[in-house]
Length: 166
Image (cartoon, rainbow, N blue to C red):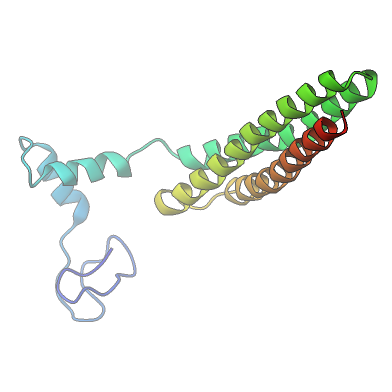
């Protein structure tokens, strides 16, 4: 929050006087409550939108980032295990080619989930206070992005190599 007079950053939300210029700071919560009783106009609709954003469900983006990060990591761990087991059972190159392409597509989905994890983590940094799930969600999203990218490239390169051999 910034001072409306000198535009310097305030030390706290409930600050009554600016520490830089000494001007009185209006209470934001009181002004939001008084605006919530007004009929919507083009000038106060934006403030009502901000009020809805402030009272959003707690830690929504952080939990979503953690969930997407965990699912992305599961894709990194499970798909290569399943893929190599299937590829080792079949001698027919057509089945191996199709399985490499299918698992490459699954890794692409895991990559998207890792990216969504990082995007939700960035939103959590902007809209929520930092908590114990912020860093694990960020790390899992990054591991999901890197792992799924590598395995996706490996699957498609293996499919191309397998196709050129047959």
